[in-house]
Image (tube, rainbow, N blue to C red; front, side):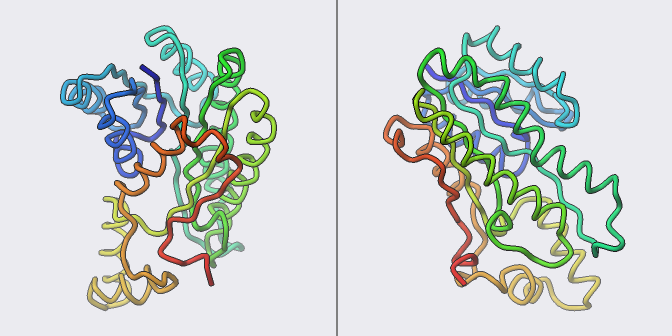
Length: 256
C-alpha cells in the first residue's frame, strides 16, 4: 500500500484527485485543507474505499506546519510515496494596483509551499528509490493572461521547479510532472461565473462562452475526474519514464 499526500484536498480539484486515488484502493491518503469538516471528509472516504486516511490543517504559509504534516504522515503510514502539490490561490488586478501582500501570499502558497514539501519528502524517496511528485500548475504555467501577474508567475515557477526536480530525481526513480488545467468548474469558479455575470450584465452562459472558455478550442470545462486520472497515472509504475513534463489539460488553450 502506497501513501499519497495531497495539499488542498478537502475541496475542489484536490478533493477530486483524492477520490481518484481512493478508487484504486492502492493508496493511503493524507488530506489537507482549511475546511472545518476536513477530518470528516477524510474519514468518510477512508470508510467508503477501505483505505487509510488522515487529515492535516497545515497552513501553506507556514513551513514548520508543512514539515510537521509530513512527519505525522510518515509516523502513521511509514512513508510518503507520492506528493501532489495542489493548494493554490488567485487574485486578479492590474500590475500597478496589485496588492503586495496578495503577491507574497500567492507566491508563497502556489510555489514556495511546493518547495518546502518536496524538500521534506525528498530524502525518504531517495532512500527507497521511489517517488512521484505531481504539481498542479495551470494553463497559466504555459501562457499568460492580463491582470494575473502573481498567479502566472507562480505557475510558470512551478513548471520550472518541476523540471529541476525531474533532473535531480532521475537517478533515484523519483519522477516529477506538472498538470496544467484550463478552467475547472469548482465551487470557486461557480462563484466567479455569477460575479462576472452580475458585473457585465450578461447571462452566466455568456460568461462561460465569451469570457472563461473563450481561449479554449474545446468549449467545455475540464473535470476534476480527468485531472485525478492523469495524476493517478503519473503516480504509477507505468509512468517511470514520464518526468519533467508539463501536461496541458486545457481544451487546446495552449495550442494557440
